[in-house]
Structures are given as C-alpha cells and as structure tokens.
Picture 1: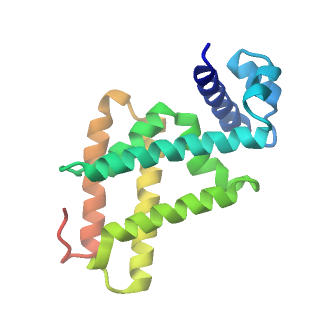
Picture 2: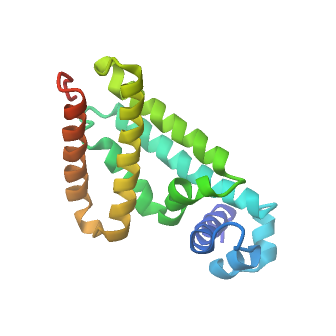
Length: 190
C-alpha cells in the first residue's frame, strides 16, 4: 500500500475507534486492530494518539474548507451549505462526528473544536450581513444557524437514506430559509 493510502486507512480506522470509544479509552492498539495492521505501522505514520486525533480533525476541516470554497464560487448556491456538510459527513462519517460532537468534550481538543465553531459562526455572520442590525440578536441568529446546520446533518447522517440526500438538502434548506425570514423578514434570500 502506498504511504498516502496507508495514512488514509489509519485515519479512517482511528476515527471509527475514537468515535466508538472516545479518546481516553482508545489505544493505539485499538486503532491498529481496527485498521488490520500492527501498532508499529501506526507509529510510523503518527507520533502519538493525540497527533492521530488532530490529523483526523484536520482532515475533516480541510475537506470542509475546500467544499466551502467550491460552493461559494458556484453561481447557484441554493442548498450549498447543507450539501457541503453532508458530502463531507458521508465521506468521513466518524471524523465528522469527532469534529462536531466529540472533540469539544475532549480536553485536549476542546480548543480546536471551539476555534472551528468560531470560524463557522463568523462565516454565518458574513452571510447574514447587515440584514439584522441588533448585534445581540444577530449573534444569536448566527449561532443558531450554525447549530441548525450541524445538528441537521448529524441527525440525517444517523437516520437518512443516502439515496435521499438531495431531498434532505432541499427540506433542510427550506427550513433554514423559513427561520431566517422569521428573524429578518425584510431580508432578501440569495
């Protein structure tokens, strides 16, 4: 197996092991077993369990960043954020869960999760723009939008049929638009 392929295999196995057992309870032996390799091979690619977990988080955030940039460059952005989140969640379900559900509860990674959440809120704030003038209300709206986006995708990842992902994107987008219009009725939806 090529080095990049082996690294991807280890990251996927580690994400599954961490999602199942948590950071503290998962050993490098657990990761090796999940990947079907030896612990020595895991250590050839990652110096520590913490480095491995951070690499998973970086892999997911990098994928989200790329998809975000692609979506923002598209002419038609309807449903883009849900589609972007869901595509990464489908490709890396355990890593996605680690980033959005578990990392914030792990002391070693809470700061990483918090920084990523702050970036999401800032992006939501940029999209809201000046359509909501009250700064406290606007802060609440942007945080609520981020929560709705992430929680919706996590829930669909658990219960949704991948063949119906586009139905989910449409329904979730319609829900987000309805909420936003209730908060900023004069806003024009792009």
